[in-house]
Length: 458
DNA sequence: TGTATGGTTACTCAG
DNA sequence: CTGAGTCCACCATACA
Image (cartoon, rainbow, N blue to C red; front, side, top):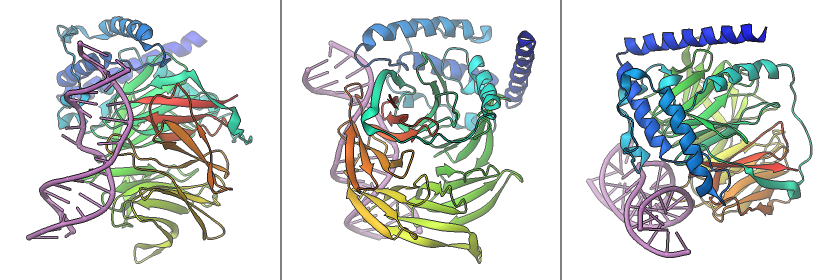
């Protein structure tokens, strides 16, 4: 029975490959894309994407590379050989940006793939995961013991090259899978603890959002500064093009339990709603005077949304009240400089902002009128992604990186820094964070060097 | 309202 | 371990 299923899967996969090939051929990009992907693979191999232990990378790295080379050699289609050889050793990934026309329209996962090893089992597992997980639902609500948090060297990996702009856990209680986006437009996947990562390049510029559909992990939306909104569809094995903007997309969000609409931060202060049911933009408002950096929905009241903006404000909005096709802010939270994030607490009762004015704002009370500003150095400079204080598993703690390679844990109750997580294994500054909502204590910090550090509770 | 410019800063790799 | 090279982000300011 199992082998029959596998055969079905394999047939479907072959069909996908054939259809995608036809699609690419129709676009007259086939040979070009194949060459590009191989070229990129060579580049990828010059770097190690797996750092198990910061202590001894020199003994492990060559082994990983050798394995990948043999896999890649086997994976090269016969019609485009000859480019083999390790003489190609560019120092910077940005040197070989492919021509823009490759980015238009749907992109097959095969041509977007940059990791050398086969991704067929990974793609298959994405579909299996969704089926398995639909059985069990509901969050785990344990209390977090800060002292129990630790960083196991096994839970460290280099998922991409370059600066990570976005990191998220799959919303799954059964697997510990991470998706990261970087400044080059890569999307990387890592099953925590595994020896390999799956790397794709569906975009040409920094990734601004990754949205994994809660009950269908084979569908993952990605937004990018290149103005594209794509949908990675593991079943069809493509990165489909959903929406294309003339302006940059800075953020991507979705209310809880609402998969019909996507909310995009577009251009200089715009909020756009994309309706999947009709495949159209259903609304667009100019909410801010400058770019919107985050969009966050209140999970208790899904019509309430918070935006943070480089116009030095964060605002809350009620999407039910539209006057003359305009939205009016419920509240405006002002900072002295750009606001990098505004997130509702898990209960929805508090809001936390992070600003370049070197403060973290915490607002609670019925109308979020109870405000406290906590000092926190947020000048990350040119090379790092900006800091964004993120809520943990309850309304008690926020997590944010600091410039000393630590994770500051801010108590929203005491309204001050409670402690700092530090580890000799954490050899770079964690800038972007995500929690695993199903596993209390599982916190990932992502760096500007492409690494992820997954803290766990023991 | 838009363009030009300066300042801030960490990571990687070669030796 | 040290230091050169990266890099073109993003904000704040100045000026038309």
